[in-house]
Every structure is written in C-alpha cells, then in structure tokens.
Image (tube, rainbow, N blue to C red):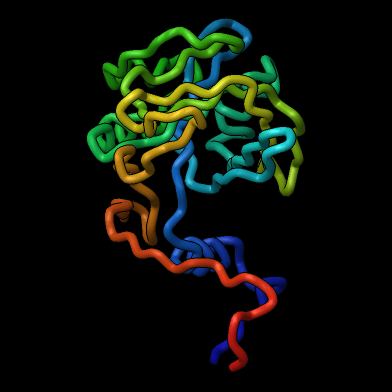
Length: 209
C-alpha cells in the first residue's frame, strides 16, 4: 500500500485523490435566493445527511471564482435554501446549472427548469425532482479560505407520490427515485440501479466463528 502525506501535498493533488476514491457521492441540487431576489441553482456532491433529531443536511462548498460561491453568499444573506435530489431524467438540466455564471444570472431560467413554490422558505423547489428538502441554516463553518460547510435543518420535505410506499408509515421506494450520483473526474456519474441486500448482524452473534 502506498501512503500520501496530505499535509505536504497541494490542494489539487489532495482533491484529485479524494474525489476519485470517495464514491459514489449523492448530489444536492441546491436552490437559493440572494437578498436582492436573484435565484441560483447549483449541484454539490460534497453532501449527505448528518442527523435526524433534528434532521440535518451537510453541504461542502469549495471557493468560487472570486470569494464564496453564489450558493454560500445567498445562504449567508438569507439563511434559507432547498436541496433537490437529482433523478436520471433530469441529469442534463442539472448539468446545465453547473455553468460558472455571474451572480446576477438565474440558472433555473437559463436552463429552462420549472419550479414550484416552497412552503416554509423563500427559494422555490425544482418541480420535477422526486424529493426536495426545505432548509434553514443551522451553522456555517469556514473550513478554509472561502471553503464552507453548510449545515441546514430540514423544516419541510416533499416527496413525489410515485416514490412513496402506500401505508400508515411514510416510506420511500428508493429505486423509484432513479437517482444519479457523482463519481471520479470532472464529468463522471453513476446510476443507482445496481443494488444488493446484506442484512446487518445482531449481537450476540447467532453462531460462533
């Protein structure tokens, strides 16, 4: 096994090794709004769930061209955002919002993406996303120069009827979401269609090994 001293390596080298090995990564398609009312949409693959009581999402944003990325600047101003999950059918629309547009450009309008009004926060949600989480900022942590960890508390969640399992308890038919995730390199993605089951062991073990 070969070892790498990240403390003595360039940021670019560390980034390349990390994003090529920490895979697949879920995608947070974040919609935010500036204090002046300009909408922004951008996908982030440094993203995951970090708690359920209260429900917390975490998003890692790297520096923008100059200073913070628009998403971070908007969240700093308004304290609100919406995380939309990305199904395979919306991959081109999501990719269109990756464009490095100036802050005054509404990526949703640029990409022709339809939205619908949120319930508790100002920014809208992507209409055709199977799942959307309305969030209020819990904490912003500067982990480096204009590198920000956004912790958001989910205050409202929206699920398409097609991905829910009918019954008394709300459950999700995960495969029905048909989500995509990020892989290595600048443009590699994965579909979440290759599944397998492996039951979690229970202590004490039923048989000695």
